[in-house]
Image (cartoon, rainbow, N blue to C red; front, side):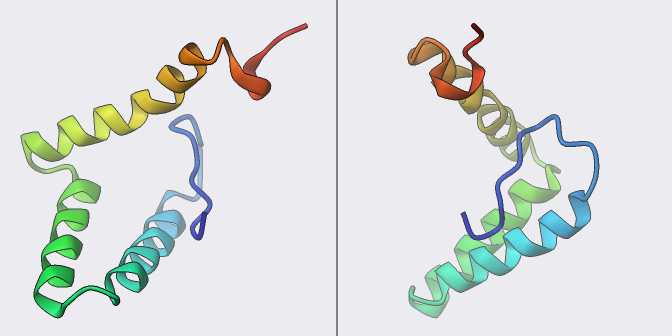
Amino acid sequence: MDAGDKFVFAQDGWENRKVAELRVVERICDIAPSKVADWLITLWKEFDEGGTSEARFAKAIDRCMPVLLNLSNQGGAGWRTV
């Protein structure tokens, strides 16, 4: 996790995380041809801004994944209570 993925309930530091995540996306996209990299970075920015219905849907799915993963493995190691 290059940018330190944070769960949806994080209270502060959002702007710093957004900058760090964009840097990671740009670094990863550097291995792709420039046309593909530009397209992927544009999609990332659309997702991050959440201005389209597709981006809002993707954000909703992204926020559901930790919960769904924990449900699928009966709470995992991190959410299990004694």
